[in-house]
Length: 280
Image (tube, rainbow, N blue to C red; front, side, top):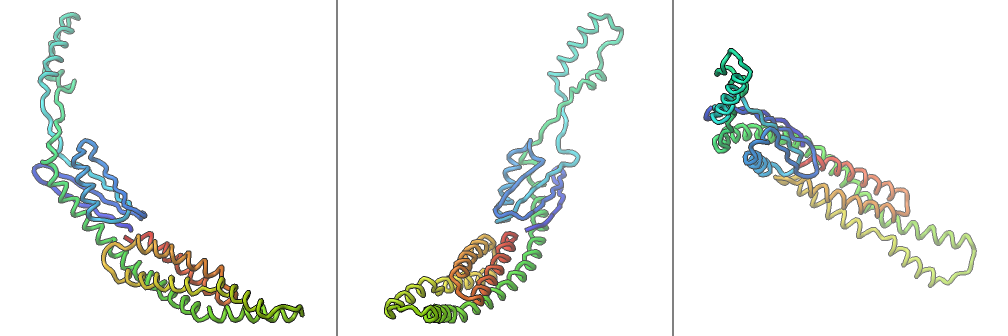
């Protein structure tokens, strides 16, 4: 599911802005950028994101504002620079003696990384604000997807009901066509043998098992539509299983009407599976 959240926070002289993007993904994937120098902070951010979301590709961008990395004078480096510059001045006979300006130009001030525990409160506040914004966006999208899945559920239920109604007619009609064809050929056949073969053929063509499994999967799908919390992975799995059953139903169909009903089931199931990939 998609969403975007931006939040800022400042505490203890440190200010930070975070941008959180959520894109569709079958699993949960988290990337944290901008905290390469603070691995503990990056891990804490990732842990918080994994606790807040169950699915999606999440990208967190952290940008520090002024005051994050204070500078300190590198005394050892300054002394070494001064010594080297003084020796060079004497060897070359230069008039100007080394000064503080020369040392500053050589970068004797080193940036000092602040303590990560000192930075975490600002990061945590900003991250929570971004998570809240993304969660709200995903919830709005989820409501729309739920409506779309409910429409497909209605179409699937109607197609399954049609298949149940047509299944007995399908077998009986095929039996009648076979018997008519035998009579048309005018060949002498053993009626008992024909009856046995027709029974075996009917068993192979029976679709009751597929219809029962489709009914059970549909019932579970309807439960998930009314459930709270992450359901996307299970809905996707159910759609995959219903697609398999619909394929078997189509392969066993002996009439155009039942084959068309199976086709409608497969089409509805495929649309459900496509939408389920976007559902947390």
